[in-house]
Amino acid sequence: MLIDTQVLVWYTNRNPRLSSRSINVIRTPGNHYSIASVWEAAIKSGLGKLDLTRGTMRVSALEFFTSIADRLQLTPLPITAAAAAAVEFLPPHHRDPFDRLLIAQALERNLELISSDAIFDRYGVRRVW
Image 1 (cartoon, helix red, strand yellow):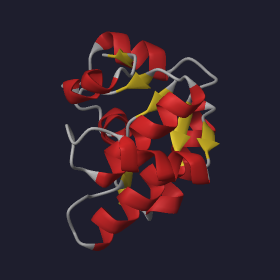
Image 2 (cartoon, helix red, strand yellow):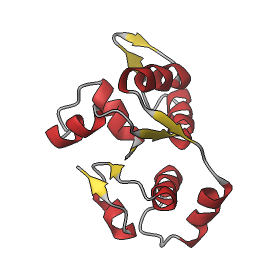
Image 3 (cartoon, helix red, strand yellow):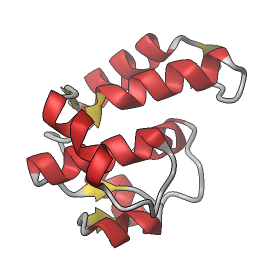
């Protein structure tokens, strides 16, 4: 499964919006996070729109993803040229470029996506929540 950026941040912060099903799936080894999520988190953290923490300490996007990947045994999912180009042909249901790339990656690799964002369903992505 591919885990949405927001879900990883919520998981780390123990956000009550996470469903118990999502928490159980996230804790199952063998899931993926996208390199696009690292890029998204780095941009938002640099702009002050996202507070990345490990415990009580603020960390960089790289430290955040390295730490959570180690803890949850997540595999980074690289961005292929095919997935990057596939966003061109996705319907405009979702305008967020990072989410569109996650959709393209999930479709390319036939992965389920762990996300609270129901708009992903409109793309035919199998979503877990």
